[in-house]
Image 1 (cartoon, helix red, strand yellow):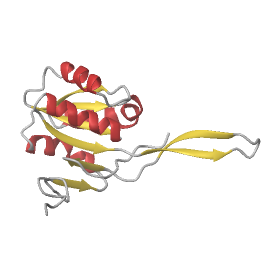
Image 2 (tube, one colour):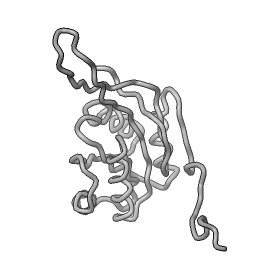
Image 3 (cartoon, helix red, strand yellow):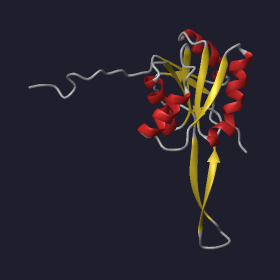
Image 4 (cartoon, one colour):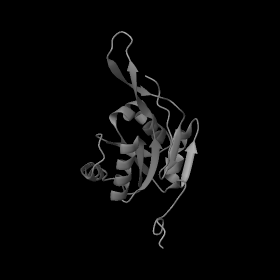
Length: 165
């Protein structure tokens, strides 16, 4: 009887996982460790506003050029192809997926399309539904929750601190 796991590659962890205060400060080191001379950062507008400038400033301060590719919100083949076509400077670059699940999945696709290494910087942002005591309607609020810095490459679960607004 064939095992349901035969033919599957199993890994219980990413190639490297870093978590803790200031972990974003290690991003440049990781990019260089992976052979990168620059970074292509994939992020959506919300994450860009929260931490994108901080990440690119850190890379620049450490002597690495970087540029941002704007993730429009949905992970599709068309999105991956469009962003990959914008990554004309991918030679020697590491793709950095900065954001949540869809952004990370898209960054993985872009990295694969341009044959680049990948660093994932997961973020956490949650939607909170709170009852409004002034009336019976329910309101939606987007809450950015800082929970510590995480930088990892390959895939992982983790969070990066997003400053409260």
